Length: 391
Image 1 (cartoon, rainbow, N blue to C red):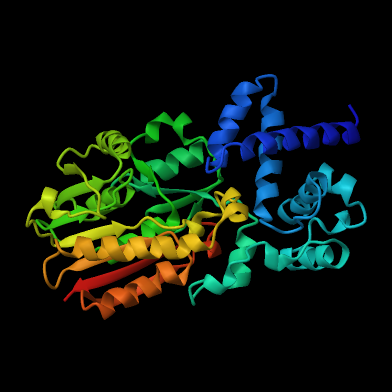
Image 2 (cartoon, rainbow, N blue to C red; image 1 turned 30 degrees about the vertical axis):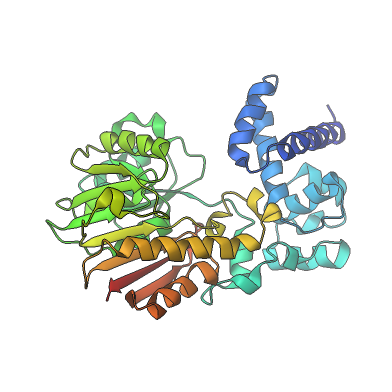
């Protein structure tokens, strides 16, 4: 089959895929693609990889070149995100020699010769937290983040040896953090099962703000699947832990993850932080609270680029209001002088510094320290973390 014909078939398939995907608003692209490939079993592994790359690159350019057809947008996306591409070579032959250039040169060439404009890649820059480098953050959205694992204490050498023996390339970021190519099949290395946790680099860095002591009582108030709780327990295994979430189903996932990690001693509750928490917790007080608050998730859009084109700016203030509400509610159960660890995976000031400022204005907490974790400099997610002390 000729290259031109194969590219034409891929473009037609992606056009059909996008029509189907648009009928599933809000569905994560990764989950949709899993179902799409099940419905199209005639596609081989090589075809699935090619289509996945193309469609992810298509979404990585956000609203840029929106007036163009699918084929041209794919070509522009491929030129930006790849170092070789039959689609870009066929559709943009005059620009194709630049495909191995740096991102700044690619952007300049595209802006001079197409309708592409870099500011449309991420048009929400006016909302960014002050410590975000807009250019570097936007450029990072064009690259798939790495897969990060956190090594369990005592297993560092065993995991590193197993990865080396398996011929897997990796980057060691610190004594406990390893970055791997995104699609690394770790489950095929049975000898390291239970010796690591999959956890983004920035998420791991939030643990520097916990500073828990043995015997203390801690509450992970929006625990999700338990990543922050496991991080806490690995650094302070003798804390008494309560985990809660509004979603019972996600807490079942937490139970399975804790069991795999050998964690048995903890309490669990289904709890809605937007309602009166004393109905369930009574007057219980904690020595520390981790609040990984619901947010826009804008710091993770390198992994979920489909979110960029459909994002509604009004949701920033929506989430900020919820964050202020649940943070205020959580502190009812925090002992005076003890820390609330406020975390988001957002890059927007309204969800980060402004929430912290409003909590201080209410006299609820005082700020000890905060940080915008610039994951985009490490092929990771970007997050915000603050250690707030109850007044």
